[in-house]
Image 1 (cartoon, rainbow, N blue to C red):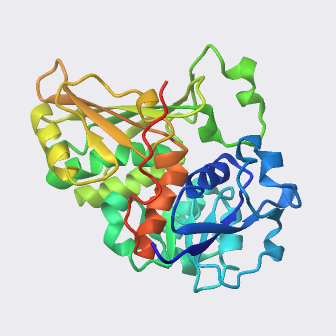
Image 2: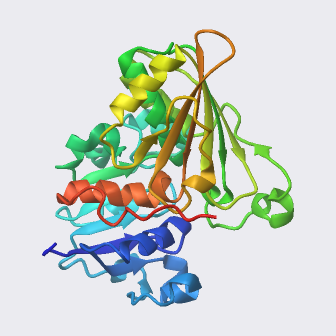
Length: 344
């Protein structure tokens, strides 16, 4: 590759920011030239994340200190609601991949309902492309702003969207039971994430009201061509990384598997396992941009069970963001993302 794209990471001091640095470090076409982190401005990335201390990187700065001259691409890894006010300040010629929820929902009123507060950038919302490469690849090729998906959302959308599009499952009977590692809750300290609070247990939270539910409503309804309302319950487990969803659907299991295997046969990062194979585990995708899916016949005729796993920090966030950026920049989609999972 002859061209290098100068890259800024806005909000680099969180888990997704650190993961972007780790992945971009070996990306042959991206060069990090600016990183921001307001509370840690003036520090080096190695001081914030010692595991990255060996990588030559610019110091963390405030947003006001960023020199946008020559910057081609920006990843925004800031908290929800913060990204809206920041991205409007990025020069229009710069392509942006936002990892927050601020531009995921096409309807501003729906965003305000689920996330609270007035949306500050409705004009940008209109041009944002939902950041699922497997479904919006063509739109990404000319996008200025790509809105990264929720990690819970993409893990279940990858198996469910093709099935609804093909009409092989009942849209009115979908149950999603998802479990995530603690990094899915971000790096900000909280009592809930204390070791003694999280270890040796499983915690169902935001039952029937988790914000990623809005993404399910949006994307599954689009796929089905009619309103779809799923049952979704997230759980917090004592692990650092990974999401595992067990999805219950009404449909013939063999047809469900055949549909998914055909849909993802040419995809670089979605792996549909042989019908009836052992269920994938989160440790099978740790540190990678892979999503692995298995399909099983339920004991009740006409029903199927789907197991879907990914690393919430990679395919669920930073890795998928780089995948989107590769498409938007006209690079081979898998560039910088082909490392095998880390095991054990």
